[in-house]
Length: 110
Image: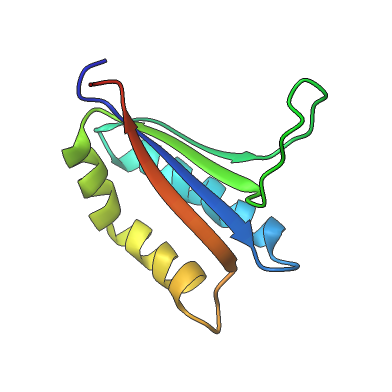
């Protein structure tokens, strides 16, 4: 899949905020799939335990997305619903649900 961009964003909710953050991200991923032609897939996932995978991350919610190209990811980042969600639930000290987060992009191209 040349040109495709894979996004892994990891989220650590503030204490007592995991359910609300999960709800907000489920809604955000649904909007992303509905409104963005360049988005191939968008999933909100929670970390689970399994004996075959003993590792554990401090980030308990992971968003997994695939876009047809980097331009489509840029369009996602510029969407009003994404900017609004980020502003309210990450940046605003009074309404933030997030203690820590990181986002990384991947490509199958060399």
